Image (cartoon, rainbow, N blue to C red):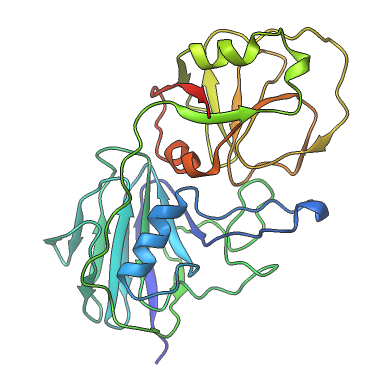
Length: 282
């Protein structure tokens, strides 16, 4: 019998994610993929999967799933309570779920996104080489809702008894100068790095939207659309920066002042509305 996870309850946005559709931007296809890549990879290693296996990404909410066959499961990312059939289980450790057992993840106590990996991986049908859900164009599997049944692939190896979590990286997000810094006053990058911004409720998988002092342009003409990259700090006409995340559009017409280093982008995935954001040049 093919094993599956039956979703009994969701408390926020839940999507299937893997490493995404890398290399298709020239065709207008966003990359998608887990916003907190290290957390998703850790969850996969804990249950014996390849790091690229598909997982569930749970944003600012809870999740309950029933396993139709016994499986190993791991929850990482934002710190959340984990129970199996009502009994407390560990966060960031492999957990055994018996046949017809129900695992529940509570709302995050800190951070914003939690990852659930299951031994064998979420085996939905790939689209353009990936099982990731892109929320910009909704390419890939649909949003996970109560009643969704997710097939599980065959387990490839035994779960890990222990896996070291990533070390913390406190402090500002590291940025490099962007290609359109000349569209702003000469000290714009310094002002970006000297300012505290606040994450707004409009933030999502497409971009981290920030509120704070305006970044003034020195040019008022229109910029022709050009290719965008992950981590680009784009500045719309209102002068308030947006950090592009995994579901960002492949092109854009607003100038890019800076680009967040890839190693720091997972921190954007775990920021909540109201959190303070600072930048520094790398």
